[in-house]
Image 1 (spheres, rainbow, N blue to C red):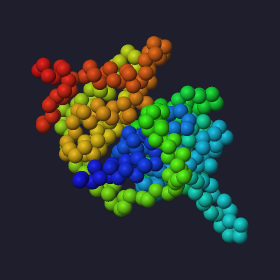
Image 2: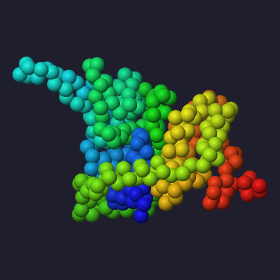
Image 3: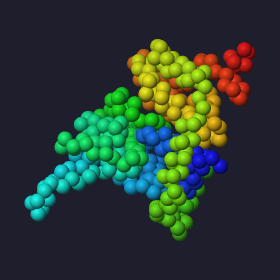
Image 4: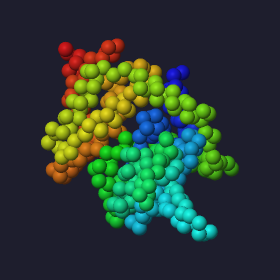
Length: 329
């Protein structure tokens, strides 16, 4: 089995026994880890967002920290502070929760703009500035932030510049009936709380991650596929339903995640299907609909899906086109 396939399979296996109904989210988190990006989770309270993030950190064998977003949360509360030692000899830096491998920022949109800006620097630069000194964060630093898509009272909506820093957004929903029954049966058993214990980390996770990233970097991308990604982004910029389309950063993210998916599927080249499979997770949170489109009840996902369906699928060596338009050519 190739490194990327092995990495994704191990993450899904570790999290599958802990979090029910979120298997797709676990796979996307693993792909985001390989891509070196950050993830935004949206969904109603109580469906396992925090458990998913904590279990993910345990599977990686890294340090996990949780930050609860509140209006009075200050930048220093997450970055850390410099204090004078009790012995009166020198100043000492006390790192905040950002100095961890996996940081869960729960209800990130309840934090104030200043705190969000501090988080933005950390996500983009993987370092933070405190009292004029720049300090590096862990090499594989990952932010997993959550938002409640229903209750917006008392929140500070994330600016487009910060939303664009999240490689993917995962829309989490309630588990299917059978999965929820299975979950409740486990809680009803004598060992019902056993799943709250620590997971064993993936063996040699850093080496396997490095091998997976090398494999993704070697995944071939034909020019026609690159043009396909650009066509999708340009379509969002020209759509009458979209006020803000996908940026060049979004195009890079789409291509990167498509490469990760292709490698994880055992291919050494990117297929149009890979792009189509990740376009919602990568692009939907980055576009802003016009007021008219929102009033009409259109969602970002629906708008993006319609645009992708209307774009000609390129011919890639070894892949048979699946769109009706290409089939006629």
